[in-house]
Amino acid sequence: MPKIHWPTIVKLLIASLVVGTIMGIIGADPFEFWEQVWAQVRMAFTTIYDVGWEGIKKALYFTFIGGVVVLPIWVVLEFLKRRKPQASPQKTNKEG
Image (cartoon, rainbow, N blue to C red; front, top):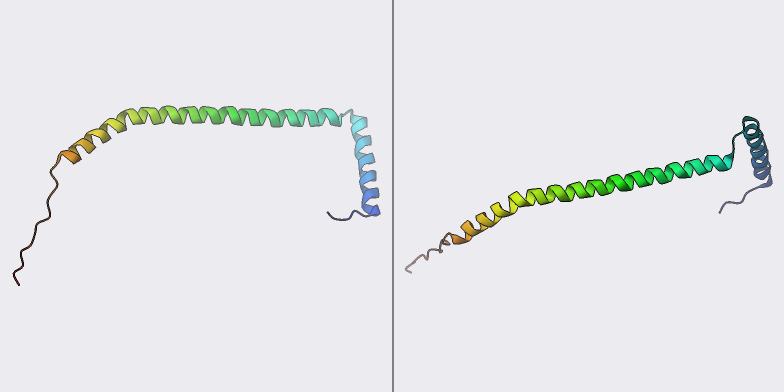
């Protein structure tokens, strides 16, 4: 952790006093500000979470619908592929 020097502490105190005075004049409450910020952050994460689950549900639904078509076709093709007689390798007769 970097060492903080006294001039830096004094500058931070002066800046805090100036900003606090301005906020007091305009009637702004920093606690209310941060409460609103966190409320917005929570709402954003909740929305992302809800949208994410909706996306997952839709993906599963579409996978199921696609599977209803793809799997029977695959089963039929596998059945037909296994039903065909396998070509036996021909033996070559080399007289030597």
